Image (cartoon, rainbow, N blue to C red):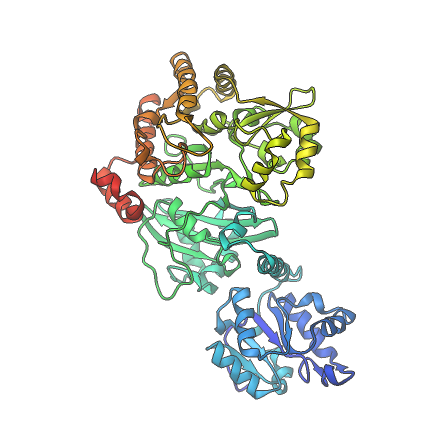
Length: 604
């Protein structure tokens, strides 16, 4: 071929007089078997195919299904409107750069229109089709299992659901159940990581290209922290789609596949790494400094494993369990120390769009196989809990410190299933959801179609309301957890603030907190492995909270992280600590990151 093509990841096909002979809207067409086989062959090379055609959608799909080729196309755009913007939309949905897309059409006007709306797109006409299969730009890589096609089908379904949804982008992401896991055995996946480094551009912040031998050398360097990312959500598994390399407080590589474009994973990871120094090269589709509260990523499944030997005297593991607001605490715990693994178990959003809290002590007590075996079918009927809520790593032997927020015990109502010992927490203890008189208020507050009167009727027939936990029950539950933690695990409990705050529902909640705080004060005096991080010392006025007594300003989470550092050093005999000693440096960082929200806290 005279024209030299760049590497192609997506081929967009015209249909009439291109993929087949003739015009479908004018009568029967002659199907071209060679093009059919070409689409399948490209798919087996990991190159995705799409359609942009002026035709009737339903009629066209019927023809493609009859030929058993419809499932090989993603984001098909079949309509009568001009093609330029539609091609632009296909590329956006695929999360690719124009330069990596090939558009095939017999009409030169359509080709020029595509170039106008998508500068840099590669185009060709039907006359050049016969030579395409041997073109180096279409070499792709072996993908006989059609993994890449399946992943794009998954993205297509997600895009369709989002387009039909009335939710905001953030609300939609919250119900996607996004899960991220970090892995350190990068030497076992050199080819995939090398592919990401060489081929990613939109979300490749550093754009440092490496040869294979250079990558292997870096992965073996014990001075450099390297991790690859796997991502899943309720639509499926995106596979390995991210990688970073970090030395001290400087990021060397920071890149992600376009499959996870617009999920916010790049910003979320950057914050969780403690906002290290990074030199951003070229144009990027993301913005690491965008001030969005990323609460839609399911941190419960994040874990770290490494192919490098991790000596117990050199690396420690912390588990933070509580509400999503504690993600800010996790960021500060990571600052300045790459020898700390911070694992997280936060509340998340179910597939049904409702928040699921997993941190209540009554839930922790039920985190075992027996609960699922006995009450799994009941749990499946609940709208505000699922089976994943009853899975936790809190009792894992390699956890050095558990940092646990008890606030849901202070807040939730308790419900018993029939005449059993199975109890679950939900909502506010002042609002009994088994009482029909409260249903209108509950439905208006939740705003989800899943939590409807049919469910509330079933729930009230099977569960009885027990009110809130008594203070002695909270004390007993914490003792139960403390007794089952490994003997060397430090158990740090964050109590509740006692700020007098006006709230339309939670009236005089500070009095309730005082009662429970007294019980925890009593407990920690007699249990040496249970240590109190006393929130009352840091959250002292209504200016320190945001929307309710349980959510604090970010500077307060920073201060609490410092207190946790002190508690760890004190209670583990100075064997290790979180490096948060350079307070002046970090205060300047906080001012830069959270100036708008925390300014008043610094000027008092």
